[in-house]
Image 1 (cartoon, rainbow over the protein chains, first blue to last red):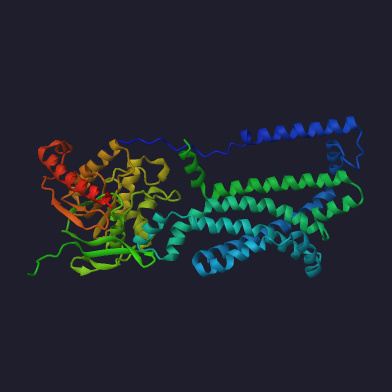
Image 2 (cartoon, helix red, strand yellow):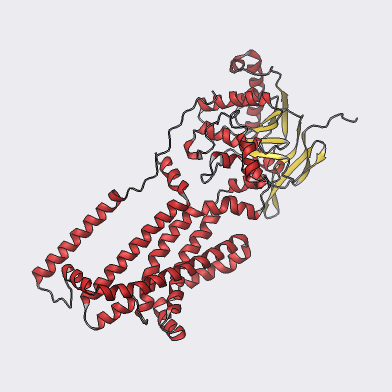
Length: 270
Length: 264
């Protein structure tokens, strides 16, 4: 019977972008049209609720200002998220190797999420000023938790039998980690990464809103104070767009780093 | 009396009990003892939950025995893992590694360079019917091929004794029969000493030189039956009168055990 079994080649991994994007795009278009019609027909004041057309028009005219405020926000987001990832990976690995540390640290991690950001963010401005640092801290605070928990959980969910197999091969704790626990945890890391990145941009906006020199958050605050509702909403649209782009970027990273994951999942679901 | 050659592997008085709390203990293994000569294939069967896997874990050094000794070539090796290559019921091929990388894992863990580990594993691919699948990933393989890859990963480690824990338990019956016939073939060409845990009496008789029947929990050896069928064994032997005789003996012993395990 040797070599008598033929095997179907695995389906080629392909990002089916169009079918995934069409339904939300259609829904969004329908909402925007309804909004446009309602505002025009109802004669609503632009300062109260501007029409989508006006938001786009005014936003386009203010594009230089919006762009100049988007860059620092992006910069903070990446820096804050980098700090967050570093802290989350370090903590998760330390916790994975030390049960004592796990018992000591995990409750504190959970408690750290009970800190009301709305109260802390203004204090950050008092402590660290209007520069980059308070933003980076706020972003790291709001994003490291989901990433750390995703990693800790991922390491922990490694198949016990796989660990036993490695032990029977003579693998010490470090080799078990490198050969099994780490790769096993990567799929749940990428899930956690998506949650984290969704929080990261809003975290940056929030930190800027309470005090900054530049950035989309402070731009929104200033436009609100001068009753430019249209420009506030234009900045909101840019924020949403940036968030979605970063979110999609995690899928690109996932496919590059753990290509086996999506292939395996697809083969299992036929 | 001095034995000329000690058995390849020997279990002496292996006992294992777990504390249940409130000063009570659950005894799982009670004085389990058997041995295998070099190149001998021993199958272990017993009622479900009788502690066969615990026995394997003790042999593989994954769990410690409450008392008793494991010997390899006459030396006490209790708690040492390096004499045994362990093949669990699940194939446990890792999706992030190619088949070649999966099969060479044990050697890599043991400190071989990747190059040497992979070359040694690759040299066995033809014998295991896996030629051409070196770079494939586990999800591209059929159940039987995955199991052969898992066995290759076990064998290539070059350990003294193979511990096979229900390797074909999860396969459909047709694939299982093919795998048994194939394993019988490769085993005949190699001098592996193997201990196989199985639920399948026919599999035990077909593959093994000796079948050890464990009692219900706490497990001890109830029967040590030598299977005197010529090798290589053809599938047609499984319908012979001798085969049926062994089957009847084992079935009777097992049924007695299952009945007594249900009694309070």
